[in-house]
Image 1: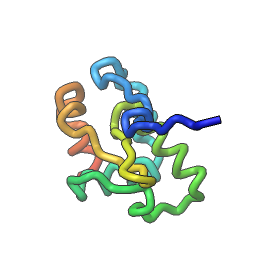
Image 2: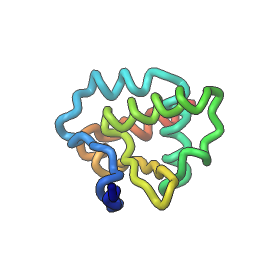
Image 3: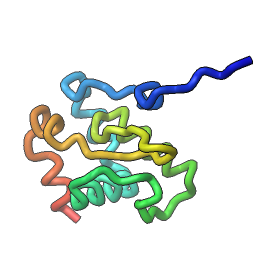
Length: 109
């Protein structure tokens, strides 16, 4: 049996349209301090970072959960480069739907 090769596009997890995400879901995602730390790190980096670039006070599986919650809330976009899962802040899209919210979150701590 031959396993078909997967393209990079196949390895991109689904991302919601930020315009379809409600403020309640966004606030629930940002209430957790670990998730706020991830958002602050991406905001400061101004570039995509792999999961290993984050110094988080949680296990890998818990960190994976936090990244998932942020992705489902439309805050981050994830994609692969080789075997590295990259994370990027959806800054422009998010600013259109929730003007000033990211600046308020990252500037608050």
